[in-house]
Length: 295
Image (cartoon, rainbow, N blue to C red; front, side):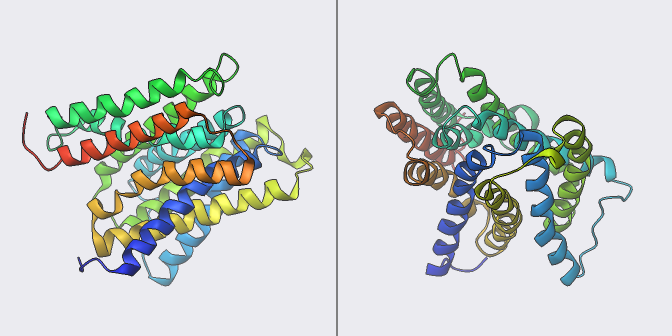
């Protein structure tokens, strides 16, 4: 890994911005498209730049190899299900709240890694960080202005979507010896295959008369927030490592709240700010806990 340069910080901020911008674009896409169709087209459009990269770099895509079932399972758990749950939830929840809820991913990842891996156990510092972070999520749910009986289930589904990302990440360890580009292309292909018939059967997208802004947001979600974002993530991982790349967890909810306010005029209550701060502090403490062996 090279010494961190100004361009590396720029790319990190850019990646955070692109991922954060997914939330308000999902909201706009729901104005015209159903959640299954959004999930399918996001994965389909996202697959295009990744498959092209594999082609130009002569990386073999093993989507239909002897390990096809792993790619199919990961495509289902890490892409199809969370993309659907998030799109379904954002129909009734502000996009900025979705960004904060999704920021809980590093916290739930710490819990699940403790249960299912041997090298990433919880210690006192991590435990404190998890408690702080999730207290922010709980506090957010107490904001009856933004989360109420009308959209409570939608908010829970978004949290479930973030957990699916973590489970999918753990499953990816089963094929950790394969190239990242190959794995990503393969799970995107399988995610598309799994969602296409469901979209056709349940939502009949050919009957839609979508708004232009919804269609543009959906294309953006696929090409930029999924495909190009994954490629940018690979670049950062290769040149700067996982610890540096993981800092996007701090920036995504911040950008998500700002963009929701600027683009969609979404309300920012004092509880949203407090919850956002608590989640970011919790993530920071958990990451500090990764550097100690206290138990």
